[in-house]
Length: 156
Image (cartoon, rainbow, N blue to C red; front, side):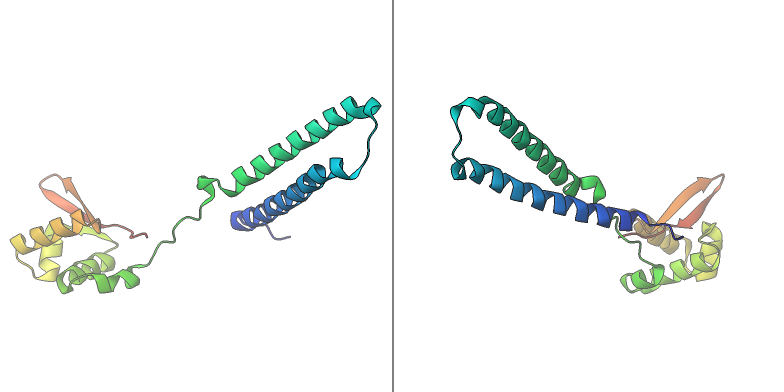
């Protein structure tokens, strides 16, 4: 037996909520139209009025719960994460060298090793890494006398 994912369950619950709203709206129209179609005697007027009021109230609650379910902001789909290949066109040539060096070393390496592998000068590497860090592509962690550079996972 296969297990349903959260998206499948949410999709089926959306369908249930929409059907419930449709049926409740149909019943509301019938309830509004019903008093005008039947002649009632005055003896059962109070009982029918109470039942009619309770039914309208319950329909209002059902419609409210269904609309709340459908418009819940926590149910919005989460953004998909994008891979490094799709973002590579956004990097400059120097940034691409840094990303490739980090990717080939497990997404983390010392800044001094990165300078040596890319062939940049210390100042150029520092400026480039500062810019990449401010843009959110990497994270630099001070560790003793050096800095560890880590490639962040990029998400939409």
